[in-house]
Image (tube, rainbow, N blue to C red; front, side, top):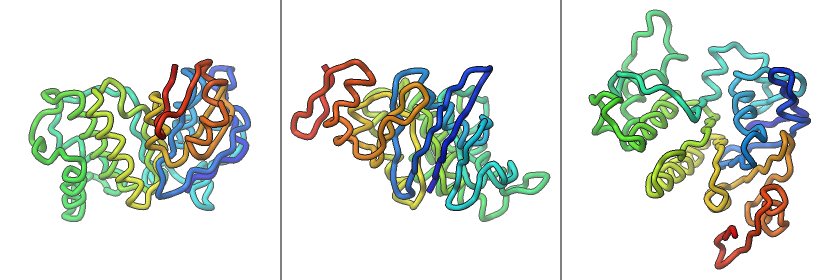
Length: 247
């Protein structure tokens, strides 16, 4: 579980996160939604230890994440950014990077590491690509490999920044279902997602942000019923047979 209390983050003189407090439970997919520039990615990067907080605390269970070493942080939180370069390496090699926080110099893989790598590729559905070069894969296949790398890191907290971006609808649903599977393993999954109907459907805990502040946290359907999506995004929504429609 991640607990954030009164978090403030300023970047290049601009306050991006403002007095933000929220709880992200384990065994759940928490989905961050909000307009572009509202601070969703900045919040993920703060949890990942990449953006330094001006004030406030980020707790994993009862531990202040700002007080742990970089290596220990990497054993608690795995972060998959939205944009990344595609390295010219094999799928197996990239997935194995997830084990780096657990290896001593010269990063020689142990038997247990190889087993975790194989299991991660199996769960993500990329075992058949294990020896292929990343540059030969489609966008959807690559995304599944990156998710395998996150699984291989074997952390209790998983951060996914727009993992379904640039994927077709079937691949998007596959990634969302994978996020549910990861949460079911007892992990805390926090995901930025731009598709609001999908966020409402797949998010156990929906967190709505606006201008760096928390607007709402809880059931996606309750958020819609309160007309908060309409207010923040300037749209009109309605629910038909438990499905969110945006007009």
